[in-house]
Image (tube, rainbow, N blue to C red; front, side):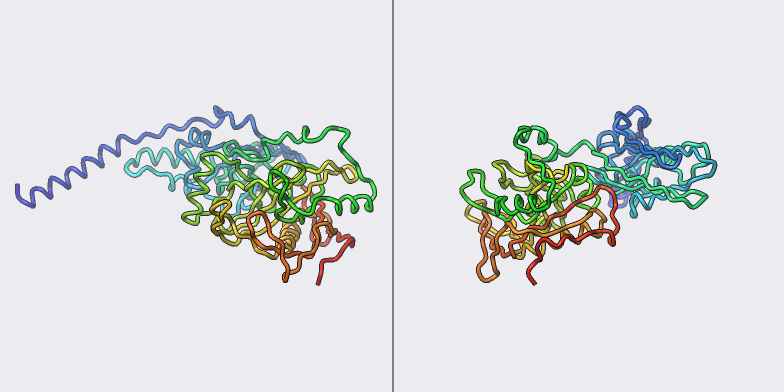
Length: 420
């Protein structure tokens, strides 16, 4: 057989393979109502409009749409809008995710390589299940918006504008199954006995209590001190949780084989692992109850904080003590082999958090109180892995809110002033 004959045979084989693959790919999604994710739906009502929302996890999404959208970084959010008014309302999907995907865009990213028939079926299925933006009076519409992926808790706002120009806003915080998050394993109700709780009604008593808290975190044995406890948060569990999630802070996975592998890969290749486990530091004889983080482009650069629920209430609100620092790189140590290096100016990271909550409208008021102990830049202290840090010795005290608070409505309480 000559070269020309062999080339023709090769081309024919490639063509035949394409025809076979074209016919082999199948597309078999399941109706959304058959998926259990709707049992997790949340409902809110305002001005005769009822909004219901739910988020399918990765496996449920594969069943509903027949492809792995999570792998593409796409997360569908199901919304049902029931308009009981005499005038129509418009749904603004940009309020949910400014960078959302259209139904056909999400479908295109998931197309099979050699099956036009299956891809046409996919396009029609995605388009049919998209959410309409216009809801007639006395009508109900349900469908999906294709958003960027957020694991853990999906936080979003749904804005509706009526023909009467009235704006209705609905804020949702929906847990999505999948990640094993650190705070979900904590029995907050069982942390303290009833007689251990103290309820402060007077500011002076609270200030005295906050000043007498430990200066720093510790190791498990309590024999060495670590990062400074430079943060106090006051608010209910939901207020704290929602304020930080709305500000873009991510939850933290527990240490498992899977999370350890993802962390290792991110360390080696500089990936952005938003939910990376945070090492345990100890206060009240236990590791942190909740860790949150804001990753930058890589795992080596992130702001992260730890919170412990204190056995104290102030005017009926929970009191949390915490530690915040900024990771600026990684380095080798004799204790842990590899560790994050923190920015030594921990007061700047404390200031960053105040600004962040201000601009995300999650802060009601704030103050500063002594308790950490000053450590000047000329004579810094060290954390448990040997990183130096310096501080003016103050703790930021933050009253958080799960409802948006305008910038101009945030109060500063003049307890102590940071060093100038």
